[in-house]
Length: 405
Image (cartoon, rainbow, N blue to C red):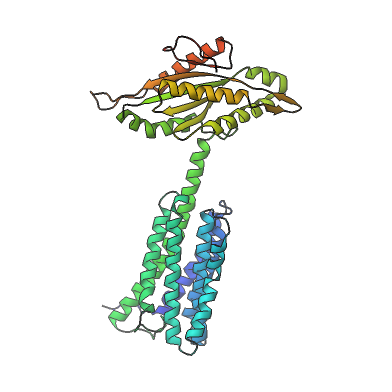
């Protein structure tokens, strides 16, 4: 079986050209992702491309000098990639970034000190350092996984593992001093050259495509969050609330627990708009949202339900607990004045409380959750509170009368 002659120099040339072409791809697709590490990854590809090209041209240049520079460029490329991933993970600049940036320079100085006149040892140490940098990059991906969404980082991690395994043999004792070898002739040598080219090219594709996946996953997540956050108050909207309920209501059902719903409405909100304008109305909404946000505790959900209405949902809360929370938030809003231009105004809210037992249906294994019925119960109680003078809460029909805050 005859294969086209493909020596390692050809493989490195192909990889270098691919690295540089990927820069253009990242520039086109990454322009809409400012401050997310794209420029650092592009710099990494440029550095890798130069390092690979120096290896490819090492026979036409002073070999050892070209290889020393190429090893430094490959180390610099790994360092820039690590900084790019940390920028993508939205870490603040720190001493760790400084250490990552200085690592290739430090390793070059150490390798020169240990093997200034022994290029074989220098090449092995450089390859070992490259493997170490890949391990550092893997650690950055794993430690910052909670700052990323989707599976792109896992694809990148897999590519890095493959890359480390492909470089590791050149760092072991008895390995050739570098990847620069004479033109191969035997079938085994040709197959190895083809395999080397394939691994390098695969690593390059996986790294760039996985980073693009990470960018797209973040964009999708940002768009989802934007669709579920009320722009004015920065609280979850009704859609987000329903999605969150869908996650923990099945657990409440299995525990045969209860759900407490507190629906709040700003009193005389139309008068605020009429007297001070809609900008003042927006300010009141933001003010009330801020007060409620400070009062919401772990296990409680808060959302803007629409207009001047807000809703708090309590998990496994009994009637007394729901009443206590309602009394607390009504009082907090009443005691927190809001500045409207030159005027200071005290805003109040009326609240309706409904506590619903949620149990598993023996017939079909799970009961539905008629959320709208529960909200209607809380809404009816809220209007009872308004009819009783506002600035208080009432409990749904199981209560005899409004309970003053």
